[in-house]
Amino acid sequence: MDLGNLGIFKLMSRKMDWLTQRQEVISQNIANADTPEYKGRDLKPFTFRDALGDSRRLTPVATNPSHLAGTRGPGGMAQEQKVRDPYETAPDGNNVVLEDQMMRMSQNSMDYQTITNLYKKQVAMIKSAIRSGS
Image (cartoon, rainbow, N blue to C red; front, side, top):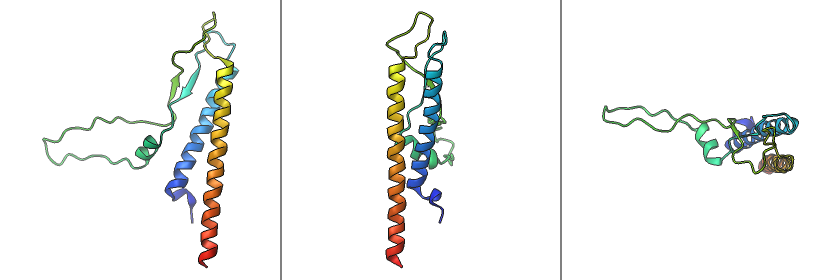
């Protein structure tokens, strides 16, 4: 049985992948905190709606010439965005605030730990169900 094919495990894996990518971006921001003209970045937020929409995407087919074309464009979870409206910019043009980046890193770490614990609990539940069903 491949747990990667179950919906909840796919979703948790995608969230963990997103958190890993975000950790890399935050680390780059911290590493470049003293680089002139460096602009801090972050990933597009991971949302449940987008995660489900990406995995269940269906392509509409016009069966009648009077049908309207869809307006939803392609989206991805790992798109980088520039940090908007920083409240502090250094005279050299760098807008990375170390305190803000450290808070983001801490939150990211706690989110990753939460998803890891949920993953473990789901696996334990499946094992328990298999044992009791025998």
